[in-house]
Length: 301
Image (spheres, rainbow, N blue to C red):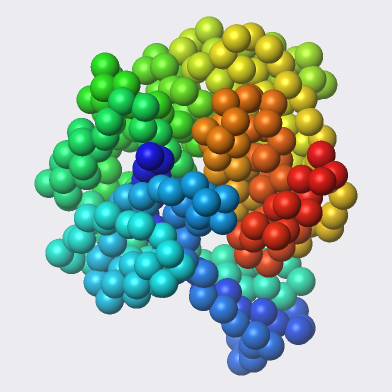
């Protein structure tokens, strides 16, 4: 089973304007939508499209949290959230008017007892289960939360997947994550130098592998992706043709496709191919990728 953790899920209120946003006056929307998300939830959403079961974990609070939970259930996602006694699940406002303007909510404070309740759920994971830790850590939690989670799970046989940036990712490497997914800019930041071309990117990925990561998946936007697998083989793939509409969730979709592909085939090359199709399908869509869109792009890879 795959378990995804979103520490600070959100309801994204997306507003579309036909004219540029103007300060100091009333701006009237041409359309609007609500998207339920967070990086781990996005991963679970695409996994569902691929008929790969998962459980979304994390924290919800207040009426907005209840709304998010009901909405995910209506989408067919299985959740097992910790319910906080105060605060409210955040609402992010995203205004699309040529350029995109975002106002992201802070979200509820997560007290130590709530984090311990989540950790106890993770303690029940079985050998072979996959745990996805994705995104940043709320300010109410210690900066070493990812490290604490993985340290407590050492020896349990759980395969950890970490999609984070900077030191948050670098600090989990000693715990031997099954997969990490930096983009090429994040990889350059971690190794402390600019990276030009596949050879330099592969060399940098090898450095992270030497520090503990089993598999390193490097996403490179329109240039495709590079995978250094645990046997030392480098896999390289481009992207299918299409117009990028929205990059939000594309990395989460790639991660979901990779995991589903690996579990279904046992092949890293097949996993990379499905991951690329999923990431591209989301980038070419207004929302997360659908199965139909994914299958169409698979034919190009």
